Amino acid sequence: MLELAVLGLLHEAPMHGYELRKQLHARLGSLRAFSWGSVYPTLRRLQRAGLIAERDPESAAAGAVRPTWGRRGRRVYEITAEGKDRLDELLAEAGPQACDDESFGVHLAFFSRTPAEVRMRILEGRRRRVEERRDGLRTTMTRAGEQIDRYTRELHRIGLDTTEREVRWLNELIDHERSLGQAATPEHRPEHPDRPVGPSG
Amino acid sequence: MLELAVLGLLHEAPMHGYELRKQLHARLGSLRAFSWGSVYPTLRRLQRAGLIAERDPESAAAGAVRPTWGRRGRRVYEITAEGKDRLDELLAEAGPQACDDESFGVHLAFFSRTPAEVRMRILEGRRRRVEERRDGLRTTMTRAGEQIDRYTRELHRIGLDTTEREVRWLNELIDHERSLGQAATPEHRPEHPDRPVGPSG
DNA sequence: CGTCGATGTATCGGCGCGATATGGTGGGAC
DNA sequence: GTCCCACCATATCGCGCCGATACATCGACG
Image 1 (tube, chains in turn yellow, green, purple, cyan):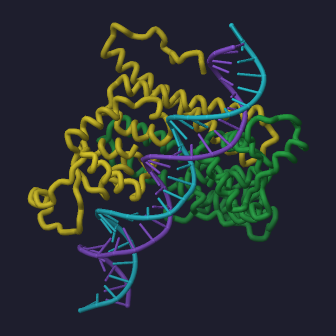
Image 2 (cartoon, each protein chain N blue to C red; image 1 turned 60 degrees about the vertical axis):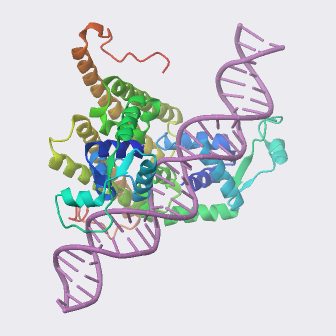
Image 3 (cartoon, protein in one colour; image 1 turned 90 degrees about the horizontal axis):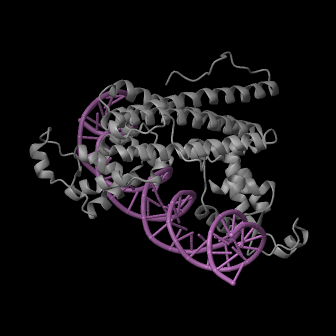
């Protein structure tokens, strides 16, 4: 997950670890807060894998905005050609595993770089996931009914409300995506204006 | 975290792992879905720590609802005296670490067994946490404004909406708790009908 | 009679968290 | 003038938990 986030961010501009985490927080709106214990090992891992490279500090100091800036180590990383390939791969393969809470936010944050059909797949997968959670919540609330304690019921209530809202929000996003797709390829437009999800759910 | 959940559930009734996870899902409304890879090692850990004990399968078979039920292993666990002490300890100590998304749901699910003042602490800590996230979201949205791409903005929008709702919900819960506390000690009631949060936010 | 799905227990690799250590830098207190 | 604190910046370690996976048993269905 962090692999995607780091690669996606470094694809836009070279950065050092600290700055990278700040950018990450700005992007993800603290929906997903990666810690130092995650980002630095990931940086090492990606560097070892050849997906990112450490920019030479001397050349960086020569061409940097601030000429004399010793600071300390300040390792600046940039994405490599293999890294870009890997990023494209990660963005394109994004299957049903991109639907859980953690992954979805990260994927959405890099949606502008994601192929349109993959966007649809992620969005619909996410909707399916949230709908399942919502239905489970509804079943529990009606079936268990009054015998559960107040706090659990409140927990379910807010959860149900949140999931219902997210489904509506996802529907809006999907409709928007679909209209974009229709505009681009008007010859093969689907018949269903509503969601064409299978009857298995 | 699972330690609290398992102990709390086994305090109500002895169970085997499979049933335990099902109960857990029913309680947490799939807000927090623990996997097999979590619950079984936790069971082992708690058993080794002496907080839970494996009920003798023969006596269980003798007194069980279904007499001849070989199945396979079907290890039924029950909480021990030390386990109950540990549960009380976990419920009582619950400090600021009980405010992140994962922990909060679990704690709330066992609120009826939690001391009133700890309930307040958890609720207010959680509110503070969510308010911080909300404020961060607001700042990002107004400051970064129009230069971020559409999807990230949507992500922030839904995040802001959700956090605002959760704060309102928490305020309701806190007011309810406070009214309970007032009923118990009516002499020291606060002046503010709204939330008496400091001006730091 | 085969096999498919649900029940049930268990392990493994690995990601990411939280705590923690270390030290350079600039600004405010006194 | 110097002392301390907050911020910048990098790094490590243990461990909780996840996802995949394997395996065993039982009932049902064809």
